[in-house]
Image (tube, rainbow, N blue to C red; front, side, top):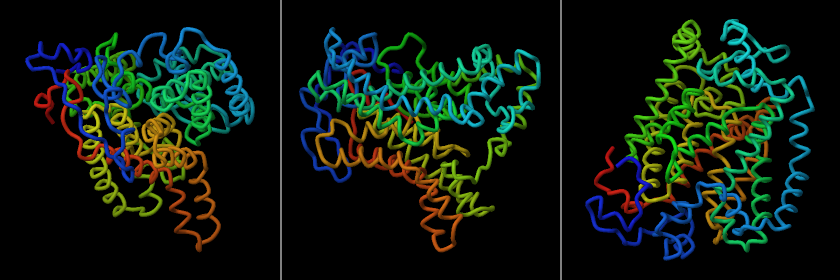
Length: 474
């Protein structure tokens, strides 16, 4: 069965089996003793609407009341919510203002690339030949379909586009925080929840990947949200898989979620995702035959168009090997490392999903997309680092959970890769520690994948009565 979240447990017998009421296995977090806060119970675990915690809770993922329920759980918006919003504006307003108005020669450079692509279509100029104005001189590097999506941006003035994009990024980040930190937020009395949400949102907004996302006007966090919608919603108004296919047609990296859908039993959704990706790409080829031919035969393989692949900003595994072990030996080692990380990552993500912890599985695949991509700039972690931190925090009932979350937030707030680059440039004496710091976010993503994967160690069985274990193959 592809759409596993649409049948309530009490109706499982209609699918050919008895209703499952077995308590799912215990959850194990590295270094965290088995305790009630991590174990499914009558309050967390089986529920007529799905799983609690980082599994499923039907009404929590859709509907106009999601924000209201996450913040204070009542129909009245208390004064504390307005106060919390004022604190949010005061806390991140200066940072957003600097991204919108300071350093005009360097701000929103990625957004300018998107707008330039839309303008190229409107003006009939070559899509992959045009460079943005001095001093950036950046080319368009995305698939042709993304240029079609960028046309509305081209119709806006640059300042309006900057505001729309920045506020949209903040809204998506807020939604990611609500999703990732919901088990922790729900532990607090309703009057305090707005402040907890704002504290988490501010902390995530000041992580370096998110700051870079605001600064450059990057699309990655929007694509991460599309993948989350396809994987997390119990029911969708669109064919499941369509959002992932759409995201992959804009940028190829979200395509890593197609195998994830397949190995977790959502094979119809995987086919839908692949079909939408192929269909949108073909439609773009019909509309722009010359640009499509150039992209799929030449531009796609010209990774140097993206910038210095060995530069500090590239925190993929390939970036690490280019800095530490350049040449053919490094390239071969990188391929082996990617295969090992991908196999383990998909295995852990599949285990998490089949054990009922879909958000954990999505976080693993999201981090995996950054690691295995040939080029992954720091801002590509903008959607996935907050998600992983929220999953590791869980309900925050043990000091180790809190330490993982606080340590993870502090780790990504600090500009460790750039500190490492300065050490490498200054003196050979600090070369080795400098390289370690320069590759810090890649190593941090690897460690987070391992932590998230080990949280599901020893877990097996079905996630709910809508999934029979023997129907999941691959």
